[in-house]
Length: 233
Image 1 (cartoon, rainbow, N blue to C red):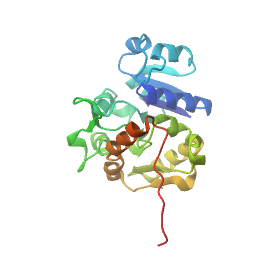
Image 2: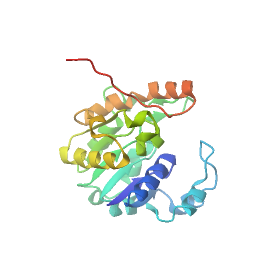
Image 3: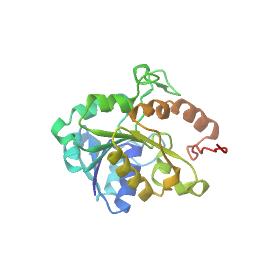
Image 4: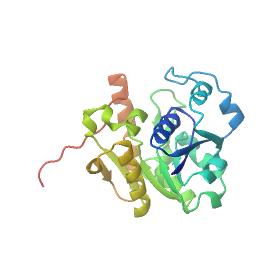
């Protein structure tokens, strides 16, 4: 399958590497291809620069947001949440309509330092997932994978024998089924994929981020996830 990932940061790179290993064709989308290709500063975690990463992953394509959207049968939004709508608006509507878009981003505001807060207009009574769906009604948006570190997104077996949970939500049942298929390829157990309903459920998953960030700060890394424990009905 051809999969386009909008965003070239650590999350986009991690998703791309895993998807290629699973046999998918992948293209990363960026605003400025030349600038991104030449980026030689190490990432926020001290890892390789994009230029270094890309030199080792030439089987991943690189294009503009629009070129990537044309390429992809499924799209993944891995841009910074504050700029996701702007990035998607650089793509022609005809190249988005009808496609499944997996939104893994969160509406984080870093303007007041760390830890970030949620963008006020995109929380509580709204969410980034809803805003994308509202702004691009022809796109089949599915919110998923936004409540964890990117290493776990693509390899849940890193902790607890894969026995932890991932949440999805969206308005289109067929789109959620396609995303579920992709999640099982990553190694998620089908009974640990929890469908929370329509896209308004993104309010809840995105509002987990302030808690997630505090836990990460306490643990010192992101190698943890949420697991729900249920009693008898």
